[in-house]
Length: 332
Image (tube, rainbow, N blue to C red; front, side, top):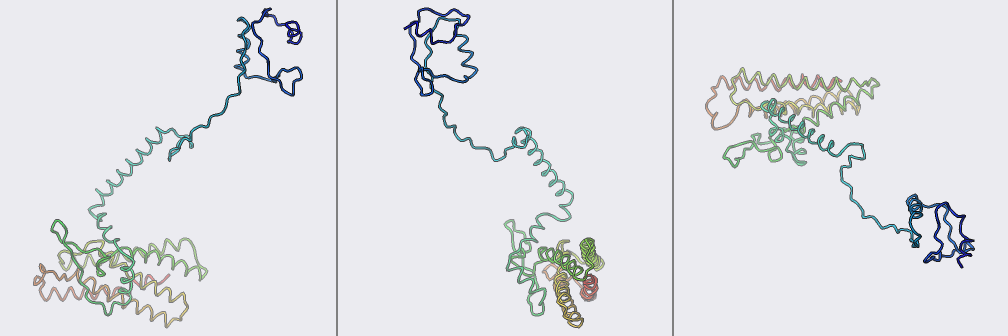
């Protein structure tokens, strides 16, 4: 049996081969090999190294190893911010995020310290505190101000015991910045659309329309502010309130531009412009009355008749000037 085994074995190697093996395992038979041996075309490097090292030791039976089975790897949940996919180290990314948050916080502090006294952020939040019903009723008031009563603003008492104006969503007479801002953007877009229909559109039209609108609002604000200073009006309205009152004129200007887009004719266009001017003039006259002639208990009897007459004249002058401002805006 030993001679048959050596006759079928590979050629003898240079290393000494044991003559009396203790046990020879029977290799599994496969249909590919007729001699009963299973031949492998190649083996992993680790097995080759192990086979070479075994020649230096006495012959030992090599147990048959079954191929390793692949165990299912547990699903590893990835982080939400996978910075490694962008080639950025996690530590560097975290440092960058912290640096960005610090820069934003520093910018907010700088704006609050330098511009917070001029236009506080809380005041801006107050003027943007609107609702859908308020916007609809406010537009109706700006377009049809003839039968609206009363025009006085409502106040409320805070937890600290101070009185403050109610937000626009709770008081229709309170000025807001939402409608003036949206009306300003709409005016710029409608102006560009009208020039496009007239085949004279240019990207500079957007910039020129925005500049014209801002200049008109600024002139209106400076006129009211200077008039209140010359008339010695105590406790004049906030800057944001005066800007808001001056921004409602864009609603009438947009109506006039739409009349021109519909090609209703020069007569109808003129009538729409005159009605928009009259409505805006009455709205400004009644709204600014609470600023120029405040009807609070502290101011009752403090204004003499001559000063009161001058203030009323100033209000009428401001109302008449609306036709100039709106005439500049409708010329696009």
